[in-house]
Image 1: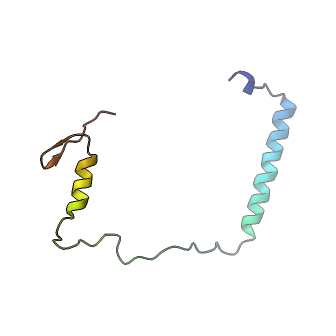
Image 2 (image 1 turned 180 degrees about the vertical axis):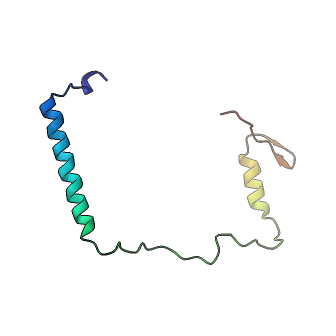
Image 3 (image 1 turned 30 degrees about the vertical axis):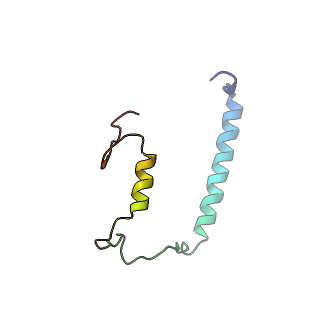
Length: 85
């Protein structure tokens, strides 16, 4: 630990314990004063799945760009690396 480590005296340890107890007691008192916890807001969705689209005609420009940027390719296929990380 080096310079981050400091041996505490018994007085310091007791002082820290007292401070922690005060903080916990204060927090407990604050929580007990609440009648109920506030509701959490959120987004309600009917479904968590994406709708499948029909048989659309593939975008040739997109395909050309992907193949243009691909590092390895073979005619109609992209060649991906396996476990190279």
